[in-house]
Image 1 (cartoon, rainbow, N blue to C red):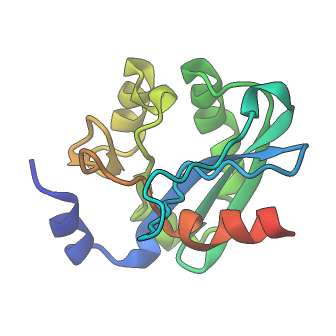
Image 2 (cartoon, helix red, strand yellow):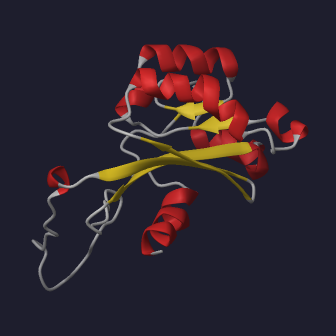
Image 3 (cartoon, rainbow, N blue to C red):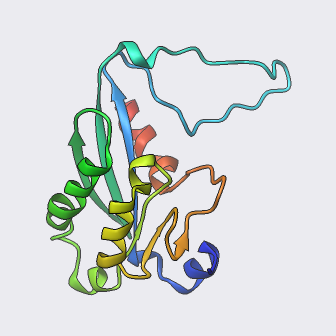
Length: 163
């Protein structure tokens, strides 16, 4: 099994569809599951939040090259069945404006979310993107103990949540 880095070094960035989901809370609290805080003064600092008591909206987005794909909003927790329906029915529509040449060489990336790891999802991705999807249990594995950071985490989610 080759590493993600070796695949990325031979694959143009414009052919990777980077994807992620995020939740926007109605109370203004941001879900900062990828935020890390370092301090010399108080190493036991914690940010208190009560995510279970407020409603929010879930959103999926993708980025390929310089093109934003989505957003796609869904309610409730992301399940394998809900994600499979999205991949089969919604993602092809969202990709209609991506040039055909890019779609023909597309690499699909997803993180280690439990819904992404279900057998039916992996089976579907193996059929749709044989040898060309990046994720847990794929031929291009998402790195173990990865901080789960993509270009969406570096800019898009924070930008949208600030708006």
